[in-house]
Length: 551
Image (cartoon, rainbow, N blue to C red; front, top):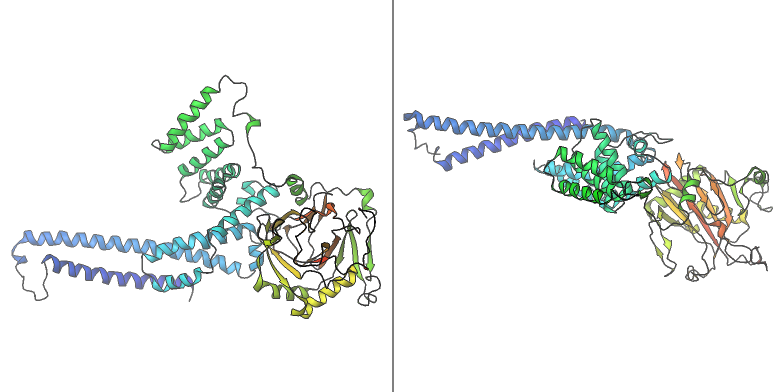
């Protein structure tokens, strides 16, 4: 039975049941009023038309109430049916390609919003009808639903993508992103929610952008439960905080045209006019272009350089240096695994030397690694430089799992392959870390090795510092997701079945600060990687120490 048919059947049965319920209530009400008796003792109402007309008026009121109730039930159930039909169509598309569908960040955000907010609204609607079966099922399923924190996180991911890839709100709202499979758009209500998330963080730059987008969509005639007055209230204040007093005043006046009695609007109007009157004689006012505050500042000094590289801008490889990069067949210094079947090796960068290995992990191996990792995926952690312990951080947004070589022959085989090609001992390396970067997933610029000011970073491991990094790319990414090195202007793009390798330490054991790198946010798609951090212990004769600090 189709979902819409089931809803219709439920609607008819529920309305009938409630009619019966109200009829019984009317019956008991008549008894309570003395107008009806189970023993039919009182029978003289017909002797007085006046009395009978009173009963007719009472019955008319009851019928009117009954019809109002039925109409309310029908409107409510029609709304539920409409909601069910919309979700029926959406889920039918989504389940055919779940990863591709959720690879579009707008789809991912709207899934968070639906499950956290809209299903709760539907629950309140259905609860009025005492639909116990649906509510009990919803209650059971709610333990798997995202919460407010998840919805907020999804919203912030959209803001992060907007900034990193220089996207305007119209582009995101209309779903016009590169490489998308399932184009979708944001409603005025969605834009309003994004603006509220920014407002809660006192991020008035993004509040202005998204409240402005919500207002434009409402002005274009989009039907929405969002009130223009509320949008204008947020927008005018955000614009004022951004330093544009003229625009804030204009928006406030527009708000008061819609709601002349708006208390805060009237107060803001008087305040803005007072401020402007004080600044009339000043040569520079808060409305000057230079006074606007723009994006909020953050902790990352190389933010601009990092985001440019993520967009494919600012790569510093010159044609002269490019000529010195080569592709070759490599047998891992005559490793038995690769003598008869050497692998394809490509130089990605010269300093630091970053090399890519092509067709180094098969689709079957990727599937197995993902299968092992998925049940264990948890929010990725970083080493706290103060405590030396693992902790979550806002600058690393992904989920990861750790796989040991003894768990499955495929993992052990990958470890041995890494050892054969790098010539380094992986017995002291960390376990294979599998990471999945979903919506807006990223890892901001960081070092893989421990610096001198964090000597206890890997103390618990007892294997020294991270000498090198091996990174498998286990998926293609439609847009975004590059690995970038801001210090040298390098960008390496994901390609399924390949791996990249670089040394984090010089042969002297000193850290190579040019290896500071980042995983750019995934704009569209689903990024899977797995990495192996190789440590110093066991490499004494495989990579002997040099006397010069920078060798």
